[in-house]
Length: 249
Image (cartoon, rainbow, N blue to C red; front, side):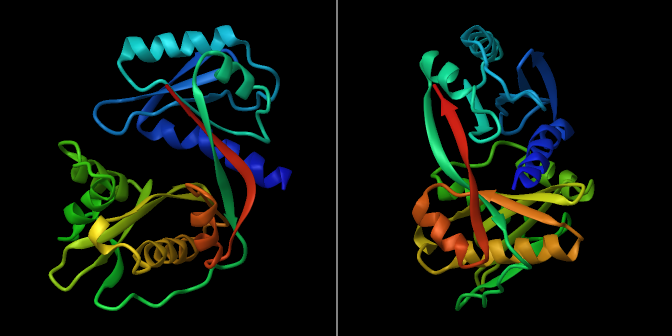
């Protein structure tokens, strides 16, 4: 499992670099979004597994305040055990989430009744609706240009998008997988509140897994929000291998 976590660490360091710059803070790296888009976070510098001084965390937080971005850190407990104490000592709250890796090819699930689940390409007429669905899942609206940015990332090969559409062509649920080399992470799966409890998120995730495998991805992983969600992903073949930690002000 150590080799798997090492590959995931390399992925975590590489994937933000396609749309963010990396600022060095010794044992920490802060990723800063270039232009508009979802703000990134700080995490342990690649290869750093030792203790992290509280002063380093506080320097990063000061820089985040200067940039007017969230004071946020993300890391894996098992590969950076020295960070949590410093983050908590700085006053941030740390949340634990199951980090899960797909075992085998993944289990297929049928499309839920009344919807069509498909991968959405950059020129798909359903792209804007598919990009908006995960925002709507949390009562938000996409920032200006979000669909265009996702389309660009699809064209550049960084992102794949899948969605569950109703008969009118409106996306009720959607998600993405982001790929670096032969590793991909399933991210941003969300279902509109009025369409929940129909298995749409699970069907979208299964479509993303199938797409990743078809494109030669060897390692597929994701972070579940909690144990109940982890059990749902377990139906697709995901198994918990570590603990993802997210700290926010």
